[in-house]
Amino acid sequence: MLSLLVRWAILTLGIAVAARLFDGVEVAGGFWSYVWVAAILGLVNILVRPILLLLTLPLTILTMGLFILVVNAMTLGITDWLSSAIEIDGFWTTLFAALVISIVSWLVGKIKVSPAAR
Image 1 (cartoon, rainbow, N blue to C red):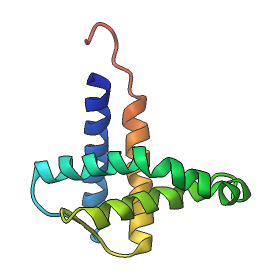
Image 2 (image 1 turned 90 degrees about the vertical axis):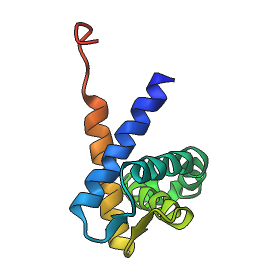
Image 3 (image 1 turned 180 degrees about the horizontal axis):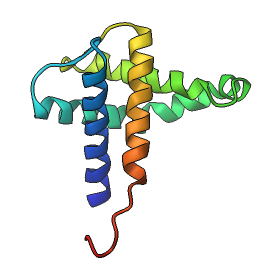
């Protein structure tokens, strides 16, 4: 359960960073809007992303994995469509925002907490 909450917090941070970096990404509301958008994006990643990855497998192989960035943008676009709390302007903004969210999630996920700090 703690692992799920940590992943949710990391995804929320990634969305906040992307919204701060790009003018075309706007999250309406405060902190809880970011948490809500992260929850929707997490559900889309769990339910829809595996299907998209399977359907786009030939393109992913052909592009040596780079098409996964487009799949990430598609999941972020679906989140934008499902939630009124986030607005993203255009494909390229969605692609770069998805890239930033992925990088932030990866970087923060790599931080190891020492046993003494727990």
